[in-house]
Image (cartoon, rainbow, N blue to C red; front, top):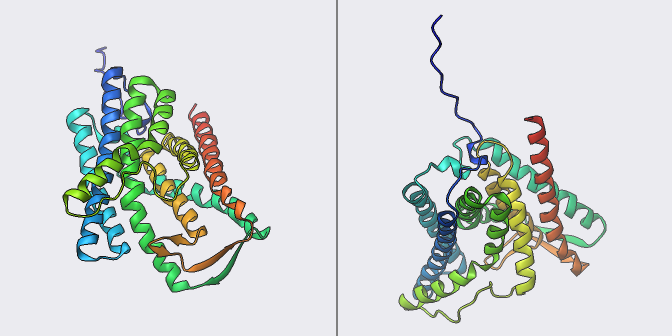
Length: 310
């Protein structure tokens, strides 16, 4: 009886979760390049919008919308180019899948449910109080803030950091080192953003002001702690063993910041549509509790799915 020819194994739907061995030096170079590229893109987007806003007298909302559009327009094709031309690999390895509905729903569900577990008890305990609500303004906030969050932060940052940077480091050094390095780099993106923003604004004839590493008005220590915890939770989301796991991180990033900005009453460029009174000012620390609770949920979910898969 003639032997049957070997058949090719079907492609794994979780290839983005499997380490593809890469020389450590090359992996580190690619990761640093991806991090620097994100910082350059962010500094450029802010600088261009800032300079044009000063020149034409645009309001803050117009500047923010332009920043968001520029970020996605620069970062997404840039990361695609790096992945294909420098790494010579497919985008699927970054955790991107055309079927995004399931991972997006998962990321949003964790963000919403953990947010409810944190903020509803705070409201019931009287730590925060909603004094008034403008439904139309609230819906407008959700729309505009949602667009800006998606284009300015959630999509480009996750594609670059938990997608490109983390994946390259994992392939060269393993998931533990990849997580530590990516998380450590996250809060210090301002080292690139600050000088680039100042240079772009100045070259375009605007007032660049000073060079800032951390966002104005933020305590550096608190800012670093928050972004470290947020970065760890986002890596935990990226590691969920489902096709297109990066979409889990993108969706959670978007949802967590939406919940936080809603509770805080909006941003400097847009109000949330309701008045929040912080009866207990220290309750602001619950923002960190929300992040940590979500991170624990992602880790537990990953382990459960891995056990079910044997």
